[in-house]
Image (cartoon, helix red, strand yellow):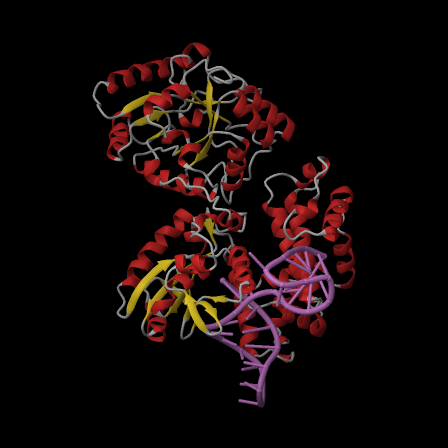
Length: 579
DNA sequence: GCCGTTTTCGGCCCGACTGTTTTCAGTCG
């Protein structure tokens, strides 16, 4: 098994954890963690970069030493430092760090004092009341450990889909805004950065009397548990299991607090360093110079004082946005109102919940100029996929329906299955009657990388192919991506004038942010498709736009921001390469 | 172990809450 980027990142993170338990130089392990984060963030496999002769020490946070370590790891499958560390401390100790309330110091004490090397041994020691015998540990800590182990066993620590988190977050936010004494309230964190999943909710509140408001929020009726509650910070767990951190700051600190709690952590660290280099101190209360407040009431004021333009939350991942801001090279990000239509939807003809007319009216209600109907083809039997005859009838129905609309064009398409050998599931004779063809893989997801890539490239070579839907097939938290050589897929997309989809279903968001960004950088056109199976799902478009923004895309990078006339030209069959 | 708008050496982000303490360490975000 070739070494993947996440193998490298995981190895460095485990090494950092072990060194921290072993009380090594904290700055050295931070360097390992930074390197892990850099490796994890690379859109291309490190092994390919090495094969191409690239110098890893040019990556941020990776110097000559770590570059050498990574190279040897890719060659041998062993990280020498990790082997040495596990000789001194059992690797299982790192599992203790996953328990809330246990950090490196306590893990070390539990190991040294009681020989504990696993969560099971920890639970037994707690039940036997041995933990309270250790210095620095008391009865409450012992009980908390048992509670956290039990909670961890019952609830998977999985992150919550952004769309699911919204259903809990928005009512909570409305409720907080109605509390007396509350001035402003907003949700920050990965929710505001529009990550596809969130670990918890970070709510920023401003109030003249923070302490009163901070205590008041514990009375929200969806609260399952008050984890902590102080003068300015309250941590809750909602009944759905989602953790919520509520920070209450004085009015003038709103911008600084929003910036601080929006993160990401890496973006904040980079910005605080920038502040420090200019003689400032940056925290959640503001930007300070010698105790004097320089900025903080708005985010813009914070960035401006650091000689930067405001950076959109979706970009704040320390993936080059600060350098881009410095060089006045931030992208003009796509907005929801740039979207002029939707090219991937289903009707009752296959597995949708509404018929053609209902979907068309819903599209018109949303102000779109065009709607592409793309039901499944026959291979997807569970979805009642269309054969040639049924698709031919739908084409006639769409022609008739188009007479009824002045401001909306209904486009004829089909989400055609890409069979195992790369052939399409319907004959050319019927596909030629469509406005455009969408290809998608729904079967044989486990093919090896080379075979899967060849299969997709074969389908992309079909002259009628225009869009590849949900290219990697992943389902967030459920199923990983199919194995593909994306660089070759990008090349084929450019050569054959094919757009790659950002599927806007909250569970898919496929391509993901980093792959979509790499696609655009390679010159590929993207398209945001809702894959809607009902009128309500047309509103998933906003999730697709959010993901596109995280991918640094502008409106011009996205096919369905074009007016219908331009779109038809781009989708026209028989477009030749370079045309 | 990395890195440079003060530095090739000497720094490395910063504050809140809890529990076990008698003044603060550990953890978390």
